[in-house]
Image (tube, rainbow, N blue to C red; front, side, top):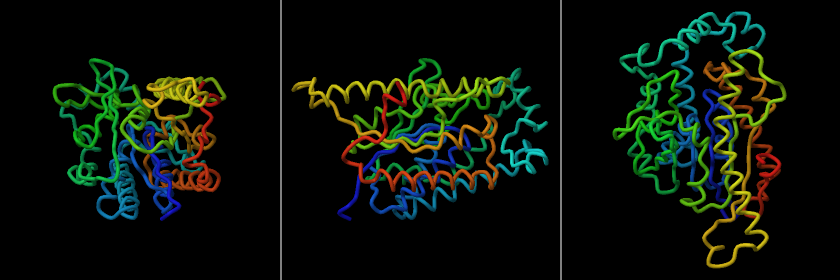
Amino acid sequence: MANTRSISLALQGGGSHGAFTWGVLDRLLEDERIVIDAISGTSAGALNAAVLVNGYVRDGAAGARAALDDFWLTVSGYAGFSPIRRTWADHLMGNWNFDSSPSYQWANLFSQFVSPYQSNPLNIHPLRDVLQQQLDIDAVRSCKDMRLFIAATNVRSGRARIFDKSDLSIDALLASACLPHLYQAIEIDGDAYWDGGYMGNPSIWPLIYKAEAADVVLVQITPLERDEVPRNVPDISNRLDEIAFNSSLMHEMRAIAFVKRLLDEGALKEPYASRYKNMRMHMIGDPDSLKVLGATSKLNAERDFIDHLKEIGRQRAESWLAEHFKDLGKKSTLNIRETFL
């Protein structure tokens, strides 16, 4: 189609809130005007990215949408066997959190004193089974239409490692989503890895240096700001994680804004100017809807909840396309200075 626009996607992590991203992706893939050049993902964003590419190899955009549907419904099916459940009162009140769940409270208290190495010595990881069912890693590696970048955090060095298609594996995806208080570190090539969100949620720089599209769409599910100071332990812990997981993104955004200003003002002359790409940044999110969800809702993968998040994501992508598709290839629609500085 003549009226197509090429974009790269930057997908954040956030547990089951990644179902919001599922909805965004479903709507973008539905639009034949959108061509996805590359995806950078972390944690739930990494899983969404790999599943999308896997489905795309099979049957284009329709295959990608079907693969994402199948993945999230499978995750929801596994959640049905979880001992952590909402109470009947939570169901009646429409509360998606586990805060009042006795089983969650016990498990949370237990995790404060017992590490995953002690509580799960056999290193059983339900997500591994899901990924082995859902993904054909060789097929993902073979995809020539999309680049893929998956972030994980090296436990020993504290540095980010970016896995591309050439070294992608189930372990790399598990590493990107490995929360250290829940799972043992994932060992790859003699190194141990934790969740990529600590060093890149997600990493933007691969989309600058290793992708073609100058338009990057960030799908945001980790709130940057909160109106109230957290008072209870789960909310305090959640806010600390949000700040930590957003810190590297904020640093990257500041660098992008700085270089963009220099290029726009003509302050960089050749041969230096041609070394930098003038990025056009965009963001799809719904902070008002996601901020009201408690920290423990990120562990909730009940079918009704992920369907709810998917629908919100689709609606936000629909609104964004209606308002900003015309700006793709022309200008940024995300004011980095207002949002991140």
